Amino acid sequence: MIRAMRTAASGMLAQQTQVDTIANNIANVNTTSFKRNRVNFRSLLYATMREPGATTTANRMNPTGLQVGSGTEIASSIKLFLQGDIEQTGNSLDLAIQGDGFFRINLGNGEFRYTRDGSFRQDGNGDLVTVDGFRLEPAINIPENATRVVIGQDGQVQVGIAGTETFQTVGQIRLARFPNDSGLRAEGDNFFSGTASSGPLVEQVPGQQGAGLLRQGFLERSNIAIVDELISLIEAQRNYEVNSRTIQVSDEMLQQVSNLI
Image (tube, rainbow, N blue to C red; front, top):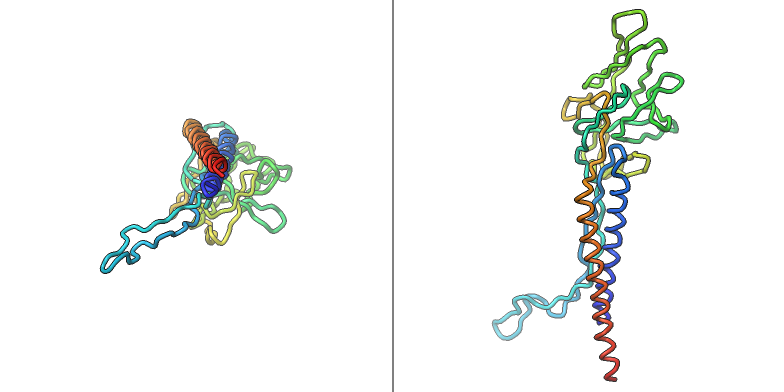
């Protein structure tokens, strides 16, 4: 009975983490370019009472053995980098990535972060920056006399100059890609950082060698499906209740044994 209690308790702890993950997904349903989290479970160690294949009598062996599990635990969490819906905003500095890739952001202290949130702004120097003022890398500077900004699907940035009918190229946006996007470390603020698991950074021109295309005047929504999250939440709740019920049954059995003593 004590083993059953501990086993059920491990299930309750695992489901609690599952609910925490689902709650974070739901809370970020309107977060630009947010990627859904999923947790993976694995079984804990097994106690082997009889070894499978052990000899029972002459020329005979145990076909299955006897093993008793000790519960479950959370093995890992993974970011699912599925494409979110593309929503039109009308803002010429909003950019959505349709396909694979990240914007590279310079934190100004020698460190870089990566994001799919393309809600850029123009600072006092004319540089394209995030909503927190971190500069897009490679740097894109918009001249003061620019009347219009045109960003192509290939990342080429052109501006219309006041008093002229021609467009001037002022920069080229490049996308950062990694061999294993799921290995990136989530840093908050829609930022990710590279790790040994994500693999080496490769910068590419949008639309080339598998990199996504840019869509000016659009933003990528989160890839959260509320209905799926609610279903997962109900499943986690029921699993938690069943594990709780297992502890209750084990306690009742233990109480009956105690009464016999």
